[in-house]
Image 1 (cartoon, one colour):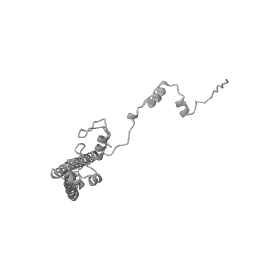
Image 2 (spheres, one colour):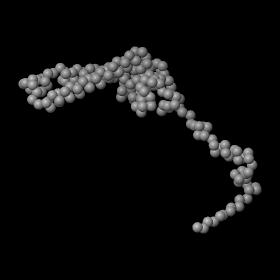
Image 3 (cartoon, rainbow, N blue to C red):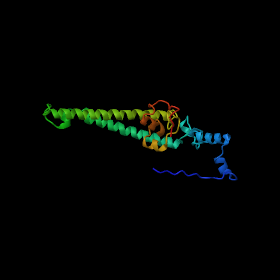
Image 4 (cartoon, rainbow, N blue to C red):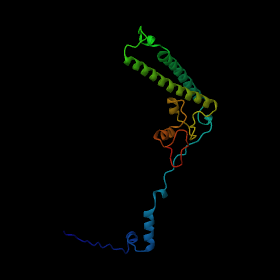
Length: 198
């Protein structure tokens, strides 16, 4: 194994940049070390845009916008009530005779009983989810009355109008909803200081 040792001679006199780099002055060495040791938290980060916090709907939405969302909520409520009534009529109030058209009330096969039970359980689950949405809509209509509609219940930020168009009963801004979905916070709990909203 053969190795070469190369010495490079750099004249230090007269060139201030090189003199500074290769200086043996202890003050200059300390400065270089402190520059290297600076943590990222000491660096200036670009300022984030302040997000306004609201206490009343009228600070965020116009009366026309509130009226539009109220109309969407009432329409959705009527649609769900119609769905709930038809699901109840179809699945829960009919007897086996009416549902299948059989002349006998006795099932012919055990699988028929299983199918009937599955359909009834499925209908009950649909009814439960529809009733939850009805409850959310009723609360959203109450927030309109209380002048707090469109404002995140936890952060105080305005809920985006696109989110309200898609889900007019939304209670939380999209940033908070994402944190809940990720499991960073439990729904309804305040955002910890260690967690940053988008």
